[in-house]
Image (cartoon, rainbow, N blue to C red; front, side, top):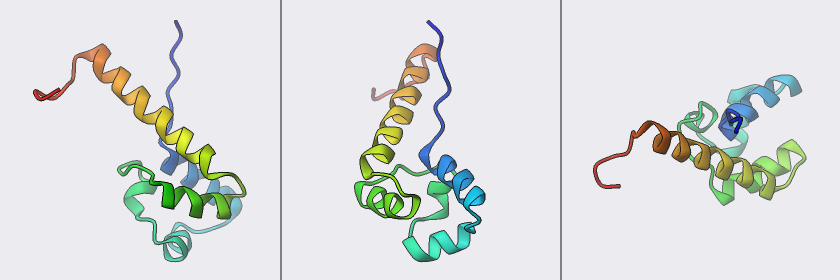
Length: 88
């Protein structure tokens, strides 16, 4: 079965912001969302999804589904490579 790489929603948003001509600093200032999220280092919350949807013209569900897909892909990759922590 062919597998596709799923991008972190923060990285997708960072690319979209650039295309929209919105600076990352402006986005961070207006939303309070941390740079670490846009770098793919933090998980999206429901509260953030609502803010992002308002700015990006989408729905919170869309962004939460993207986060879920990303998280699931990461876990599948860990299972396939055997890279689990000892407590799993």
